Length: 278
DNA sequence: CCCGTGCCCTGGCGGC
DNA sequence: TGCCGCCAGGGCACGG
Image (cartoon, rainbow, N blue to C red):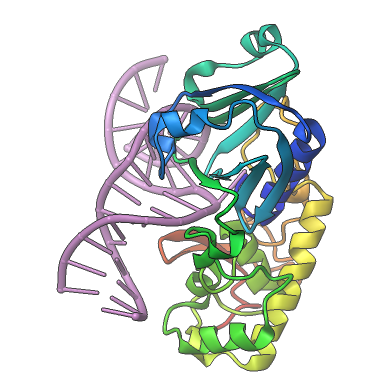
């Protein structure tokens, strides 16, 4: 569930469930997922309170009394909340556990089948704006400056799809929403970034805001159907216009079928009539 | 610097 | 049916 809308839905879910909980015990089940510290460093958060759940682009931030954790779901990371150990043992396969945080009344379980998920821990004295991970992440569509976005895009010689997936240029967009945004703008994903006009780059930001907002309202996109025990089964997959629609008719050209290409190594869906390289 | 490729992992699916 | 290669919503470390 990894693009901005899905991470935002997870953030809201965790915010509702775990804010003000006091951490009693932490288990790091997949040691490799903790990148910038040791397991002993993580034990320092025991007895701290969960103050808030924040987010920047696809990064989840769990703010504690004295530290904060930055967690990234990558491809398939998921969170579960249980009210008791018994409930946890009954309802989930523990093979994919990454991190287990027990509080005074709940268990927060972070799992990842592919083991790509990451965790980093920082002291609160390290401000978010100075954080070594987050400072490499550009602004989201909601806050990015149109001028800065245009300037970055016009310096790139790569395909525009590769550029809007680049978290250092604009953040929060992944493979699904990149396809949706480019289709909405009638832009072919292999168009060279630097050839876009300011009008087009402004329009990309505008589409991104609308599409991401709409997806958040629908609890994000769930393409693979995972267990529903996580309160974040989305429905935006039912509203996708091109992504994952190979062989289906274009919504604007009923006689034209959506085709699939590979751009920057990623599966990419387009309508060949709507999206042409100038 | 910038850009393209491979890789980290595991599971599911289509094709033979 | 059984096996095998390919693909997957992300990002980083390498090369050239």
